[in-house]
Image 1 (cartoon, rainbow, N blue to C red):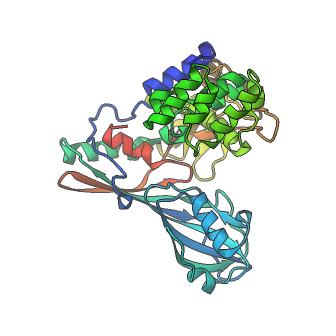
Image 2 (cartoon, rainbow, N blue to C red):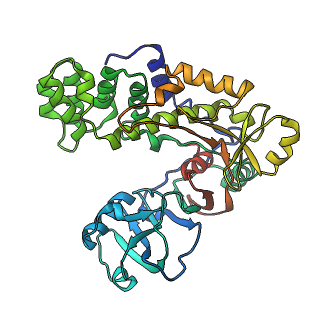
Image 3 (cartoon, rainbow, N blue to C red):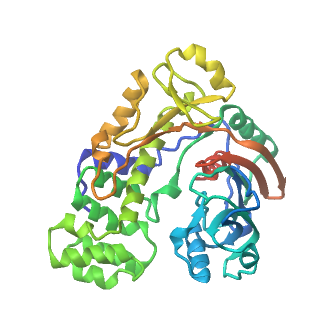
Length: 417
């Protein structure tokens, strides 16, 4: 597959080497093992920002789902109630793999009717009235209970040592591999979009034959790389709608990569851009992992109590607050309006952005794809940490603030991904 030059190569090499996720607890060996072997091994429950008041035009449903995404659960509920999916509010997205509990809201729905709903993969646990629609971000965090199977080593020594470091210094706030799509390259599509390199967008969308297990899918990618679009279309699986749509457009208008890529749904394009943002943020965490619990002059420090950021002018004066976990240095979710740090902090972030071959104005994309940017803490606190073991399994319970991923903590324990 043709690559787009040094900037693209840097992101590809980083992804392949997984160099963007160094461990904070690298001095302590991991226990290995696997997560999500069974759905019950990964349980998540939302911690709401507030509880329903008991009156109002909106019905707050606590749902338990298994084996489906939040959006699929909402789709099934909307069809059952014969309402638009847009009328259903939710606070956050939950993984398809595992048993998860979260709250959604539906206007003009009687709690009694909500409790009587019968849906495949979704159970309504409770239903209460409230005065407003639930919106994205209306949660404090999530409570996790995770079973790690097939562990080994000196578990009784390693797990407490790792958790002690994480409880004191924090959990690296990586997005991690789950943000980069089935082939692990969503961020590369997003980066190519930012560089307006439409041929590379198509190349990355079609993907790498070694990244898929399905033989026909792999054959389709190989055919595309060899320039045989007809053969590629013949082999591409039906569920690869975007790829097939792009190839059909490209077959009709050879060489017009921008027009071919334009058929991709805007929601997917937004996901690709978000993945690129996430990758670049992860690079910043990786570069600052050794001093993740420190702040330096010029940092934009984040207050954990409310998420507000302020410029650090006297690092020594603010370090005590960082040690107490009141504040943390923030990293970039790059965008055209993102507030920039100063001094060495900005120099590091600018270098990461420059090596990706993009600049801040590039995020001002047309067609509703504008990415304004924001700041995100480099680390997050883990609460209510506890663990136990039985044989070759370890169970870990903890809470994380909204927007943080359980895998960032679990990978420190296992050192397996």
